[in-house]
Image (cartoon, rainbow, N blue to C red):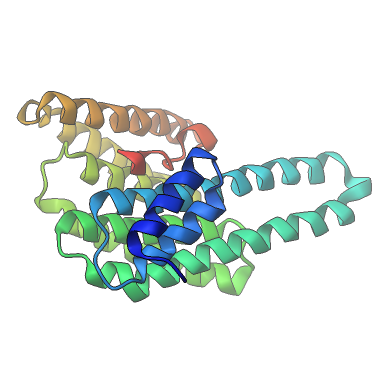
Length: 244
C-alpha cells in the first residue's frame, strides 16, 4: 500500500467523515502492517472501520433472510443474493482475522492492547459463524471459543468493574448463548459479572463508572432475554461495547 503512515491515517479519517467504512478499513489495515504497534487512537480507528463495514452487511443479511422466509416463491433468487452478502462478510472476517494473527496480537505491548485484539478475534469468529457452512463454521466456533477464553483469562487481574473486563464478559456470554447455544453458561457468566462489578464500582473514577454502567445495562438486558429463553437481537448483541 502506498503512502506514509500519516497519509494513511489522514485518509482513514477522511473516509470516516464520509462514512465510507470499507475505504477507512483499507487505509487502517495499511497502517497496521507498517511494522510499528498501533497507537490507541489508530487501534480504535481500525476497530470502528471494520466493525461498521461488517455491521451494515450483517444487518442486510438479516433483512434478506427475512425476505427469504416471507417470499418462498422467490427463495432461490433471494438466496443467491444472500450468498453475495455472505461472500463479502467472509472476506471482511477472514481479512481482519489474518491481520490480527499476523501483525496485531503478537505486537501488543500492553495487556489492554492484547485483550482488545484477542477479543476482536473472538468477535469476528462469532460473526463468521453466522453465515459459514458446517465445516468452516466449526473452525470459526473453535477459534472464537479459544479467543474469548484467552481474553477472559487475561482480564482476571483487572477490577471486576473495568470496562475492558466487562466488554470481554459481555461478548463471551453472547458467544456462549448465540453460537454455542449454551444459555445456562451465558446466564451464569452474566450474573457473576454483574454481581462482582456492582460490588467494585466504588473503586473507579466517574468516567470509568459511566463506561462500566453502559456495559452493565447491556449485560442486564441480555440476561433478561436469555433467562426468558430468548436470543439477543441487534440492539443488545454485544457489538457496541468495543467502542468504550
